[in-house]
Length: 95
Image (cartoon, rainbow, N blue to C red; front, side):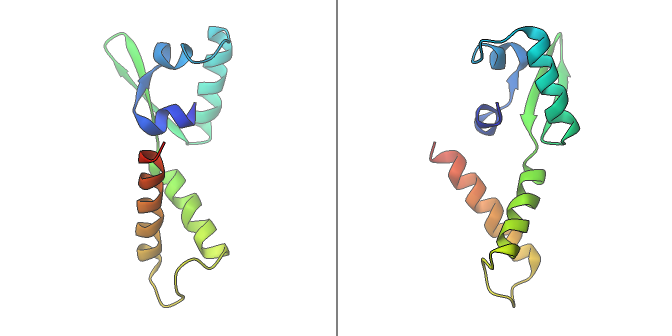
């Protein structure tokens, strides 16, 4: 689900087309992802559109960058975050 949302926001119905599960199961997955702060939901008309919350993923990437020493120690955290953001966007485009 996150892979699909990385490419573009999608309605619940559009996402459901990609998975052979019931509506209640999809709804439960949406709830888990929202509670984990990985996606946000917006009601547009009668549909709910979901989109990936990149800021959360960027924070995770920043944490990995710091743990694994990506980037020099003199660089500000914002610079590493910019690198992580850039890498995340590049990864999204390469799929």
